[in-house]
Amino acid sequence: MKLQTILITIIAALTLSGCASLKYPGWEMVRIEENGIPSTKNCTYKAQMSCPQGLFTANDCYDWHKKTATKYDANTVVITSSRKVATLSIANNFAFGGEQTTSLADYYNCK
Image (cartoon, rainbow, N blue to C red; front, side, top):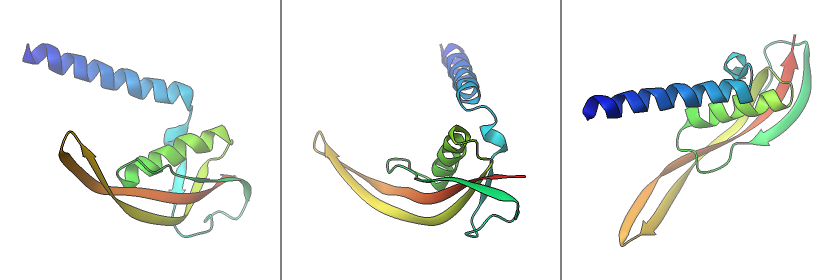
């Protein structure tokens, strides 16, 4: 039973990562920069987006930005600001808290 659960988890993870690659082709190759301007000067501005609250780590926001950048034909994401937000939820008489990260980024297509 344990082996079956592990195999199902592995197959599900591979399937989901494959779906992300099909839906957002090339997202793994999008570069993240945090210095406010692209390091390459030959860049065309595409869009500015904010990572939605509800993602729990900076890496979740980075992946979200990389995937979203592909929709705008961008290959570089420049994080312009980032902040952490404390959360508290109460459900079924239990309190759940944590810290969520959100960030604002500019998307560029750099040569």
